[in-house]
Image: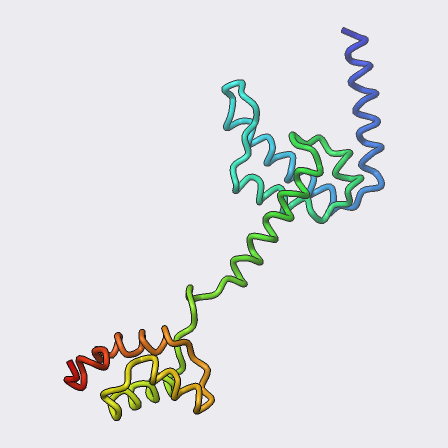
Length: 168
């Protein structure tokens, strides 16, 4: 019993010596991280391996990413320091991906002036099909796909050329 007490005293003395060169901020971060790990372990008293949820990972990554790697290696963590750094990289990557995601999916809509021009050409020339309208747009210097012209006419409810001019 006396030997255990002496061992405990010496190990605590070395632990205190380790804390001397650390700043107060680093000590506070370490305390918060250790408390969070304890709460993770308390949730999982079933004897299984400690499982970190996404919130636990984000919390530890946000707390520990400011500490230098050697300070992370000295800490008593349930996971390796490289794992904590990977969690932080993943957290930052997810935040960047969420911010840079476009607000609307798919292709952008065709410009209104081009839509108006396609509809005007189709109405003024009822015997022109979508391919002829597409060709005339190319002559005018408007680069648009033939399938886009077809979609514009279809969305506007304009039937194909033979049905429009009564050529059938």
